[in-house]
Length: 86
Length: 222
Image (cartoon, rainbow over all chains, first blue to last red; front, side, top):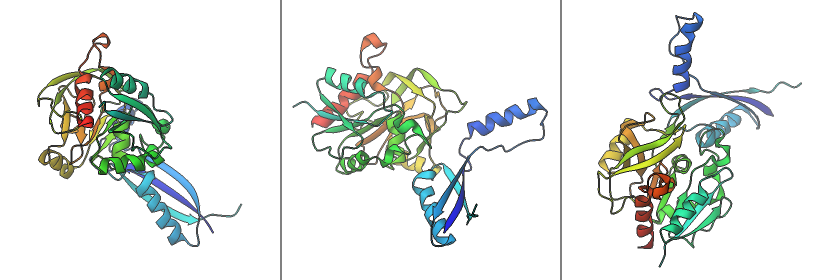
């Protein structure tokens, strides 16, 4: 079965996010004066062929720990759902 | 006998010839080692030079750390062999878990390319062996992701175990504790953002980098 996985990689709390900070500083110039806590991360999508969703999730989490994210500075969340047939 | 230095080359590495040139100017022997090679037995020291290994896609050093040669570099380091990662090489060594911490984007989002003053913080690493603590060196930096970071516990351990090798005199990138370079607990694996190989001859504006690379060759030949 094919599962679509979506991985969100974000900076760990306390890790500097210069991109988020820069965007946060830019927003008031556009009139958005009510914005705070801007954080910029990565979104990764992939399709995994696995017998079930739990197996697919375990594999994607292992990918995150080994390569997709750097656990020293990044956190990640994984969402998995069955791929809809076209 | 002259120290033999293996200089690791990934697709995208671009400082390897500078390292080879300087090592040979200082009386050592240097050979390039392609990233698919797995045999480092001919060498007394290994340098992972700067550049953009595998395009730095995903994160700096993230892909390079899975190259076949990195298994050999890990084994070489575990055996006590001197390993030095310069700039992108430092990023590769942290991604590989051979050095603690990580390099994040510079504070201020600026690519910094300039000569900066650094102070030697320990003389027990393979790159600063015999160099007096406090020695100030003028070294070029050339990076966007040189902002060293680690959690408070790791930073405390770096202090306790004397693992900070170099500090910036005037922090150019936001690095925690002004750290420009660190070493492994044993001191044989060193990573630094400044480029000693680009400052090893007076005609280039500074010969201070030769102080570090000479220390490496001395340690390697011992």
